[in-house]
Structures are given as structure tokens and as C-alpha cells.
Length: 536
Image 1 (cartoon, rainbow, N blue to C red):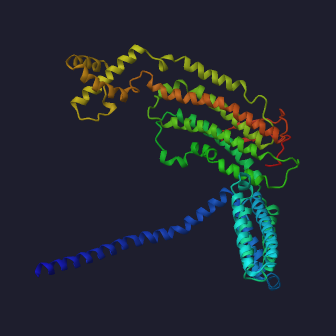
Image 2 (image 1 turned 90 degrees about the vertical axis):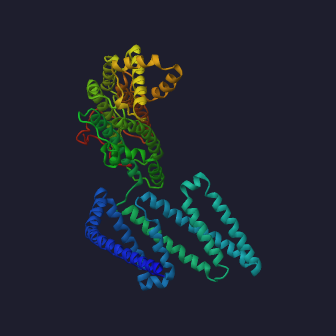
Image 3 (image 1 turned 45 degrees about the horizontal axis):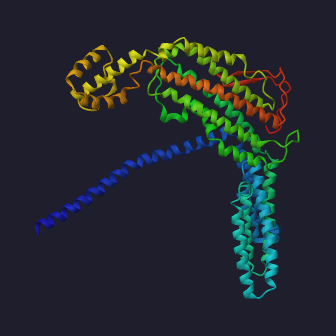
């Protein structure tokens, strides 16, 4: 009896202790929660300010949406309009919420798809309703069911067509929804056609308000967005290359900032290029729906911007690899880097100048300079080549010494594995002549079988660090990536020139002189005869 009572008392005490602990935790969390609630308004305000400061068009678009909703709400709030339209006025509000997008092209695409989908569905439903009323009640139900099945299957299958899915997928969905609502409702409701008629007009009113807001009040053009983003991508790549090379030759050791890559200016420069595929395709699609708002009434080749974006992404992969050289596991000594600092900086500067010139040609709707690949770029490339050739021992070394060092390092690692615990770090391996003598003395006493078992796994671990030119290998990769960029510049220039020919860019004139200053992050361009309208 007594042990049971004692056990019950212990359980009660444990529950009481748990409750006390829980209350203690709550008392600790309450001040933290109160502190967060105090800082929340300030954090919210900073976020709101940053979003609007980064792109003021977002604030304008928010006011445009609010004004549009207010206008269509008058259909409900004003008595004469409500008596004429009735409960279907809510469809105008729903249309504004769904259709009004940030750019004019996106609004046009969704608005016209919704309008024509609703019109086509209503017309087809009216035809089916007229045929169904001529038959009996049972045959009418069978006819409506068959019509819903056939139209639903056909419309859904059409959505798999690439062209339909790309341009009219939203319209097909609206058509399918409206057709089923009208056709199925007509079996139980007598005045369904009048309801469809009123609903179509309310949707047309909502689409009209959206189009007026998008096209006439501070319009945001998808083509302009695509044009400007292409310019920014070229400038971002240029700044990333120059910043990457400058950081590579900094005297201080480069710290690993992999966790802070989102704040790295080099990363920010090429991030927009790598993440641009879906955005470019969407903007090009919406731009094709926009009216011709340029001085010259030619159809702008928006798909050429998408193709240029693909070429820039391939170029950006090389910049990513160049950025990775800053955090290599086998760093090149600063003394070796200093030997090639000037030619690498010069070559990176010339590559950046070419990219900046391409960005300016697109910004100003003119062709590139015929001398965009100037002699300075080729001279910088030759200087780097000469500098590498002047230091052959860094990259070639002696085969005899290389083999000797490899054996010495392997022997030292093997001996330390016998003497110490397994898992010896590479930093403890001896690399001088004493290691070689030690290995030779032990070799006579060990059998060939045991030696072979020990030596082979160690060679795989120290083969890289035993090479005489291992310290120069990372720089060789860095230099080869710079040379690869020069080779890929031809593809970028060719694509930009193709865009200029398709978009009827004006010819280059010597008076359009461009001064590029990447270090100050700005570009000074003389505005003599600069064409700035069109898609920009």
C-alpha cells in the first residue's frame, strides 16, 4: 500500500513540476514576444519603404488597382446602375481583381482572353440551348450531358497544344467555365440566357476598366521591361567580372562567404542573368500583345531578346566558375598571383568595356561600334599569354623531381599511419629530403606485398599536393576562364547585332561616343542623335 501511495505522490509532484516549468517558459517567452511586437511596426514600415523605393511603379500600380476597384464598385453602390445590372455586378469586381496586372501586355493578354472566352462560350451555349429546347425533357438532359462531355473533353485537349497553352490557356479555361455554368444552369433556370447576357456585359465593363487603367494611366510596358532588363544584365555581368578579378588579386586572404552570397556584389551582378529564363519568356509573350507605341511602326522582335538572354546565361556560367576560383580549396600564393595581376586586370577591364558598349547600344537603339573588339582586347590577351609563357616552371616543372616528391610524400604518409592513429591530416606530411631517406630505410625491411597495400591508397590522397606546379593550377583555371570569356564574347556580339538588324537599330556614328566607368558604377553617354523611344 505504501509504495503505491508514494508512487502517486511522486507522479503528482512531477506534474506540478512540469506545470511550473511550463509557466517558467511562458514567463521567459512573453518579454521576447512583447519586444518583437514593439519592433514589428518599424520593420513593416522599412519593408514597405524598400519595396516602393526599389521600384516606384509598384506604388502607382497599387493605386491603379484601388481606383479600378472603386470604379466597378459603383455598379453595386449606385442605385440606378444596380437596378439595371443587379447581382451580376459582382462579376465586374472579380474581373478587375483577376485581370489587372502590373504590365499593360499582361493585362491585355488576360483581359482579351477572358472577354473572348466568355463571348464564345455564351454564343455556343445559346446554340445548344436553342437545340435542346426543341426536344423533350429527358432528351434535353441527355443532350446537355453529351454537350458538356464533348465540349469539356475537346477544350481540355486543346490546352495541350503548345501554341494554345502559351497564348490562350487562360481564355480556354474561362470558356470552359462559362459554357458549363450556362449550359447546366439552363436545365433548371428559365432566364439563364438573360443572366448570361448581363454577366457578359459586367465582365466587359471590368475588362474595359482594366484596359483603360493599363494603357492610359502611367502604363508599364512589358517590352520596355524586357528591354531594360537586358541592358541591366549586360551591365551586371561587366561589373561582376571586374569585381571578381579585383578581389582575386587582393592582398588579404579571401574569407569564405558562402552563407552571405546573397549580399555579395559579384553574385548580385550575375544572379539576374541566371534567373532570367522564365521572366524573359513571359515578358516577351506579353509584349507581343501590346500595341505599337513607338515612333517607328515596325513589329519589335521580342523573341530575339529571349534568344539573347540564353546566350547571356551561357556567358554567365563562365562568370560563376570565375567567381568560384575565389574560394578554391588549393589557393594560389599571393606571390604567384602578383606575377599576373596587371595582364589579368587589363583583360578583365577590356571584357567589361565590350559588355558595357553592348549594353549602351541596346539602350540607345543603335548598332555597336565596328571596332568593339578593339586591338586593346587582343593586346591584353597577348600580354596574359606572354606573362604565362615567361613563367614555365610554375606550370611544367621537372618530371624527375615530381616523381621523387610524390614518392617521398607517400612514404612519409605511410610511416605516420603506422606510428599514429589512422586519419592523419595532409598538413602533417613531411615534404623534405628527410622523408625520402626515411622511406628508403623502411622499404628494405617491408615486403613488396605490404608496401603495395600501403602506397596505393596514399597516392590518391596526396597526388595533387605533391605536384610541383599544384599551387599554380588554380590560377591556370582562373586564366583559362578569362580566355574563355573572350571567346564567348563573339557569340554575345553576334546576337546583339542580330537583334539590332531585326529591330531596325540606327547605324553607329562616331559622335555617339561612349565613356564607360565601371568602377564608379555609372555610364556617361553623349546624347547626340540618340534614339530613346520605341521599346525603351
